[in-house]
Length: 236
Image 1 (spheres, rainbow, N blue to C red):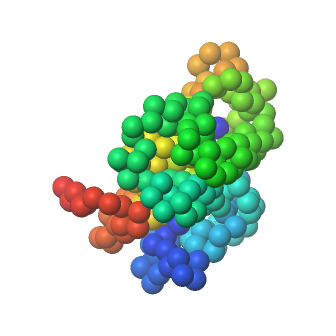
Image 2 (image 1 turned 90 degrees about the vertical axis):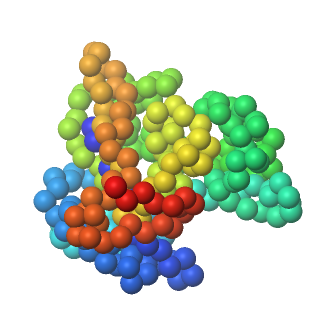
């Protein structure tokens, strides 16, 4: 089983679509994906993800299944300084790193900060969405790994967002999402790939093969967008 997560192109958040550059990125992504063998395609209900997917879907002559749980991670918490609702996955390091619970993949939603909002309910719904989908293919969550009825080589593609992708990857790899949200960057139209290691009977564990790959942009000399990137880019 192979899972491919693709972030949307450079976003125009005001209209929930793509910038002119984002549309160009989506077209270059479609050029890359044109010859992929894809078995099943899923997409966030948000416009920027659907617009990004549209270019690849056109190449494939396919349609995507819309999944509400693939929308950008929607949980809100109370801002530690203002008390106003804010997203749960973009915090400064002096706010989150001092709490050991936020490094615990089983207890991170019980952190005092996360309990100021609906994080636990949202995260449980997101994980149930992915696990329910995998169960449809015969892969069942068993503790911190999966068991399968029959090994399947299917490739599943998900067009979605950075925050939700990192939350799902954290679930698959048993890592607190807070560590990935604040320690990783997935560029617009980047490709992240995980596949099952199936070396012991009918037990499976997901291994990350590629994280945030943007080679389709680099090969076309198209600069990588920095939406959600808070450090200077390295150009080697």
